[in-house]
Length: 227
Image 1 (cartoon, rainbow, N blue to C red):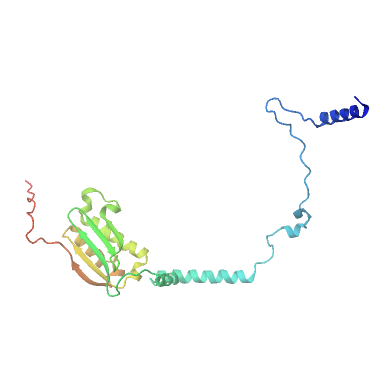
Image 2: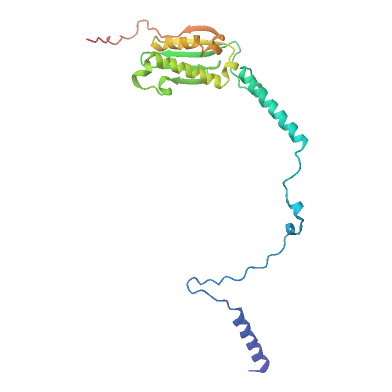
């Protein structure tokens, strides 16, 4: 082997020995080396006063004016709701309201009361339902659903839901449709004539009866006789 080649081989062996890293026996991973030197960023070069984004001075006058106008709008909306008057949001919703059908057609308040249950349905002039509930939907079970108190609570609940949805301002005329001769017929009428129905009572323009009567037809079931 020539002298230059032996010198090159010796230099290579020394480089290989220094570049070898210690290895852990259990994981075959290199030992943790020293942390790299952290280079200074652009934010470190800035002065401390310019790095803080939170303003320590007094609030701007424009922000106070915006807060005052917002509080004024909220107060006006609360006052209009207390007086049962349409708010600005209600008026904007009225511009984009759906087609409810002919203007001369009223809303309908259907009361179907039989001896086992009571059903109340409130519909728009185009006959689309707003609410459709029975005594069982408010938690009354079994035989109690056909009682006077069940129908009274159901009618009061429906009217309360109409008030929450601001329907007492949207309804201009309403027709009450009675069907059946159960105890709920009288109970629903009492609610509409009482304090619960004071918002809707003045808008009733017609009361009709839709009880189905049979002329001839099939034979009726045998009447039940107790005792």
